[in-house]
Amino acid sequence: MAGKETEYDAIVRAEIAIEILNQARAIITARVHELETKEPAQAERLRQRRRDLVDLQHGLRVDEPEAIEDVIAVWGARVSDEDRFWREF
Image (cartoon, rainbow, N blue to C red; front, side, top):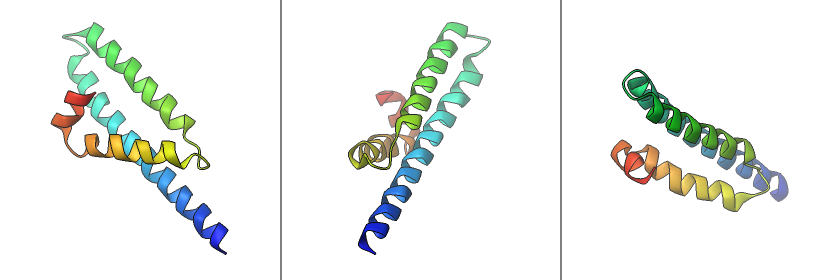
């Protein structure tokens, strides 16, 4: 039974990491919409960085808990404070 609990915990942690990255992408998307007409080049750079987050998100694997915990630690702190997000992004 312990294996299944660990497996379930790993799945939950992966889902948390995915949600955090979704929040980060939402912050970027809002900024892209602000910049689209005034600064299209900057908007495109942000789109690329958003694609990089999608790649990171798609690369998360339940059997790689260190990567999942890194996402939670780094990006979780960023999405909870938008000023910090942009300073560190």
